[in-house]
Length: 343
Image (cartoon, rainbow, N blue to C red; front, side, top):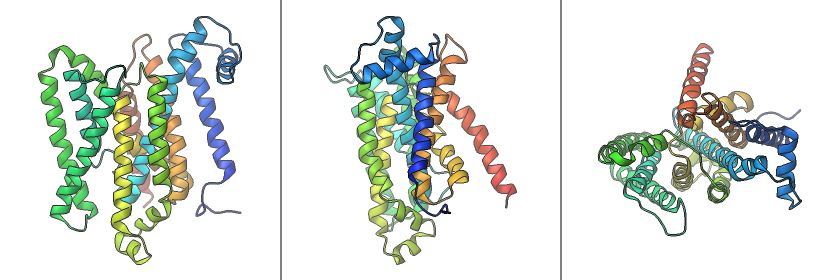
């Protein structure tokens, strides 16, 4: 019998894929207007293969509104969870996730500036926010790593975390200042900073998929190195890991993914923090298994959270960040209590 020390197996990929696709169908069917599962599946299937699909309100709701949103939600959840799992492995800190570096706050600042000052690219909807969020994410990474390098040539984990926390406070203070002087757009900015994927399109989904494919592939290719980090940076060097190169690669990929996710869905907390912990309890600490499992589980969790945000106070819609923070905080306290009780 194969142990948990080995990589993710084919049948496990199939199980997670089936669960994820069923969740997609479930989330597309439910909402302010509930739709029949069979009709929904037929509309999606026929549309994918270019077959004639029944026209009407239901097809418009499924293809134009719900399907692109659910796809975007799944991609954001997968990206955030992958970032959290890789950051926890890299920094050997159970409280680490994609926002630990301060990159999430930097990306949020860029997007808020875009919304407040109307930065846009002609004929490309959402492009202004996307570009500004990604630009500020990478600027944040450069600033954080530069300061950490000045203070500590070896770029130690504690130095990076400390600078990231300080930078987050700085970026959040500027964001609050901009909100104070943007009275006409306060509601839009505030709702966005709490996380929302309403109104997302297939163009957003394509952007998210491309970033996950590029940056996610790099992160998943470094699972052996992340396993080496689990026993300390010195031990990782002794087994032949180029510590600085791996750190830079993971940090850059996490920054890119966080920048794109924030630009599309705003600030969504706790996904990258809680999901890797939950998957670690299921599949073990080996990153060859943990990261793929976190990727799938993050997508499933955020789709269900988005569904809850749409139906709990129907017809009103809650910001998805409110739902994830509520669920995530409760789950994290339970996980922490269980781990402490277990010794």
